[in-house]
Length: 272
Ligand SMILES: [Zn+2]
Image (cartoon, rainbow, N blue to C red; front, side):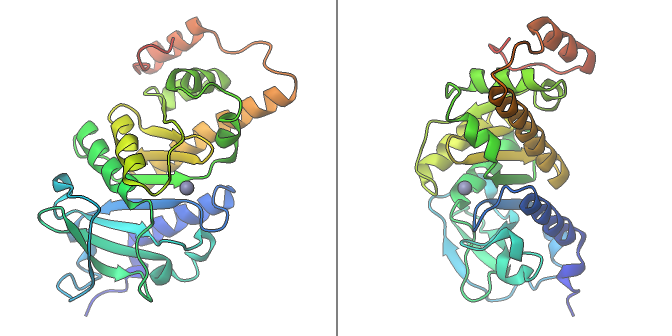
């Protein structure tokens, strides 16, 4: 008999991170979504991987994700309820061998489906797996209030956002030396925003959707959460500085370069 999946470490970690994200204030209503790439060995103790569960066509084939398994948040559900009923608010999918469809192994009760941002998640996984030698396992999307506020006042480009956030807090250039990629406004849930996000993910572990929110990636849930938290904290400092009349001084270019040297990171080209 299968073990209780709610006892699995990956499930406990996932529920904790989504609950932390809710408490951060980044997930009003049904806002935000998370996907966590698992191995079959992690999952098959807990679910019947041969069960005749539902199969759903993908928006397009993603052969790079052949046979990959993901724990994903449900479409239209609220983060604050995940802890109350994981099986309704989450699900586990396995991509088929051709990368053309997925099978639901667990969860998504009452005919639920994965998040409507599944294209952005899956294409971002494919992109980050390539960029990190297969290490990246997590994609988070949050409605980060202060970063969204900054998209109303800063020039919407990668260099401006990256430089501004690096200057707000000493840790930023060390935590995300590859910067924050900035897209133009695009329609959420579309294949196009998924493709554009994945393109920026080739070079950035963070991607901003202006007037909407942030995508963050990482090897672990902690890493992806820490990344989004750091960028959002820096954005909050900028918002507070603007509210006090604007920054009168910030970390200088030579100080940023010294930080990069001391901590052994390579800052994104063209920012400093
Ligand atoms: Zn969103």
